[in-house]
Structure formats: C-alpha cells, structure tokens
View 1 (cartoon, rainbow, N blue to C red):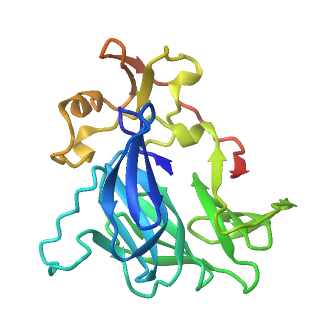
View 2 (cartoon, rainbow, N blue to C red; view 1 turned 180 degrees about the horizontal axis):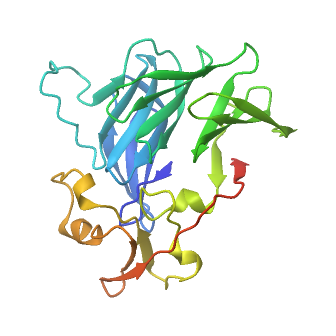
Length: 274
C-alpha cells in the first residue's frame, strides 16, 4: 500500500488484480481501478501530478498509469480494448516489480526480475533506459529511491546503493536475512517527506508541530499541475504557493499556512526492509 497524498488522508493499495482506496479513519474501501491484464505486482503514487502507476505480471506484463481518482488518462489514438488505462511500457518487459517514482526528475524506475535489470522511463513512458543489468544469482528483489541513489536488496541479501543515472553500485557490509517475494523496502529520511517537488525544502513539522486532527499537504506550483476535473475546490485552494506549508484542520475545516525552511545537505538515510 502507499499514501495517496490526498487531503483526506487516503491510502491506496492493491490486492490480486484490482486497486482499492481506503480512508485512514474508515474501514470501508472502494474499488479505484479494475485491472484486466494480470496480477498487480507493485504500485506507486505521484501526489503532485495526481497520478497512479502500477506494474502487472503475467499473462500481460505492463506498466500502467491513471489519474489519482482512477479515471483513465485520455488516449486519442488508442483503439478500444479491455484495458482503458495508459500503458507506459508494454514491450520487452517480463517480470516488472518494485516500482518507484523519482519525483524531482519526473521518472519511474522498476525491477525486471526475468531480465535482472533496473530500468526507467519518464512519467509519460518516453526515454526508456536500462540503468544496470545484474549478474545471475545476485539480482535485485526490491528497492527504494532517495536523491541521486537507488537503495536495493538482492536475492542474496546484499544491501546495495546504486547511482540512479550511472548504475555504479556500492555494497554495504550488512546483510538482509529472510528474503521473500513479498518483501518491501522503505527509506526513512526527512527528505522523503518534502513539502514540494523542490528537493531542498524539508518538512516544517519538525520545528512547528501540527495539532491533532490535521494533516500536512504538499504545496506545489499550480501552473505545473494539470487541471483535472477530479481536483476539488479545496484541493485548488490548498495548492496555492510554493514555499509554504498548508495544514488542514478537519475539526474546524480551516487551513493554516506556514513558511518552510531550506536545508543545504542530505544526510545518510536509514534503509528499512519491511
């Protein structure tokens, strides 16, 4: 599962072949996307562009995307088919998994277990590149991204730091035990919770704590965001400004704005296998 970045504190998750959404304080769920091309192996959310990306396994391995409310992205020249959602990658792909988003560079990365590769494309499916092909017997199983590096775990339990452009790797001395197909990897670091797409901004909640019944919403330049019909008036109001933090209070249904601070360096992240 993954957080959607929605002001209502929703969580998006996949189970078997569909994608569902659930609110944090409500046990009920609703179907967001009905997938018809195979089991879903991973998914990721881009809250700034309000997009969902997911990978499917056999019989039709693909990387697909849709708007955050599950609405298909328009494809003017696409013939009618059973899969209405935009396919970013559907050729030369066999076992896609562990999909992650590089928000500052507007790219997605994924592992192809069959090819033993880590590959990348832009958010619209262009400029496909292979970052690295791994040796047989020590290929990546799961990964996450922070800054210029991808952190991954191999099927031999090696913890590896890889440059996301050059593919150069550095292995850590510690090993990860009990590797399983359902293993997840998450990086715990303040830079993973930025308040905008600008990497040098940090979460101001570290110095200005929010009261109860509130949630922090990323602020972004409205000009950089597509004006999708599903964006509510409240969402448009919250997204005003670039260098501010918006706190929405569910109790009073009001919002407060705070200036954000900047940081000059990124410290060593904590890599947490789940």
